[in-house]
Image (tube, rainbow over all chains, first blue to last red; front, side):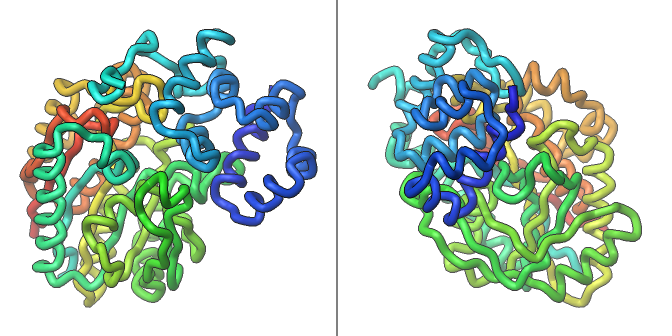
Amino acid sequence: MSLYYLQKFLYELNRDESAQKKYRADLEGLLAEFELTDEEANALRDGDIGLLYVLGVNGQILMHYAAFLGIEWFDYLDMMRDGIEKHGQVRAGVYTMTGGGESFTEEEKKR
Amino acid sequence: MSLVYSGVLSHAPGITGRADLCENTELRDAFYAKLGQQRQEIVDSGAEALIVIAAEHFANFFMNNMPAFCIGIGASYEGPIEDPEWLKIARTKVPGAPDLGARLTREVMNTVDVAYAEEWKFDHGIMVPLNFLTPKYDLPIIPVNINCQGPPLTPLHRAWAFGEALRRACDSVPEKVALVGTGGISHWPATPDSGKINEEWDRNFLDQLVRQDKDALLSYGDVETYADAGQGGFEIRTYIAAAAAAGGPGELQFYTAELPIFAVGVTVARFDIAA
């Protein structure tokens, strides 16, 4: 478990255009700069929002990463719910799901 | 002189980024109008610079070196770090106030050990307020951060002391300075629970805030806040600092829990500046 470096990877990616360029040109090279488990590195290779959420990535970091990947808002929420369905509750941090997975907005319910 | 304005407002990315998804456009626009009023109040105050006390979300500060407090003294800043299409705010350069910021920092340091930074990238936590309060980006900005994100968090009583220190600092300079605190109250942002709001908790907190009930404001424990108001509730630190800086009673100008698409009970308030 190296949640610290997993989050640091995303922190750098979210804020730094040179990291974003490297992400697109040489993802493996960028991944190698961080001490990540295979599970974490694979989640980043796949852009697996659901697994990253369950691994405990802070929601603010994850939300910015999802925006970087071009994921629409309601899809982002669903990906986190799917992650919990597949992998169980969030394993670390303070961004756990407390609401049982339901939607809290009429806009999303009507989708 | 010379703190001339102190207020608070919400900053959630949905306020701009999900404006088009919002179905209650009447209430949404009433909120925007109230932010326009806040902008006018800041203009009318004659402010020459605006301090934004933010609760940033890992745009600059990370757990490798997390300050409890930081003041920006850069010449300029850039934001948003987020995809501009997602936030619906174009990436832009924002003027800073390096000389004023450094003088304020020097004074604050007499009582609060504050970090300072000449580089600072703005995320939605600052860009959403600026989008409404200084849409032409023609007012020098002094960004300020309180750690509301990476535990161990800044204690509430230190956020209060920091607000008082900022007030002393503002009063020690000849310039007219405005200040806003920006955070959410109860909310569960960036989680599947996005849109969950504890209105009763919010209204109780806001009542204490506008009454300047210091003892009540500083009594919130992080465990209870997390349970009742979510991880977003930790951002009350910014409101507390703004109240402490002002010293006078507040006026709640707007609050609604009926725009959950913005993922927060949206709030606008101002304080009297106590002599």
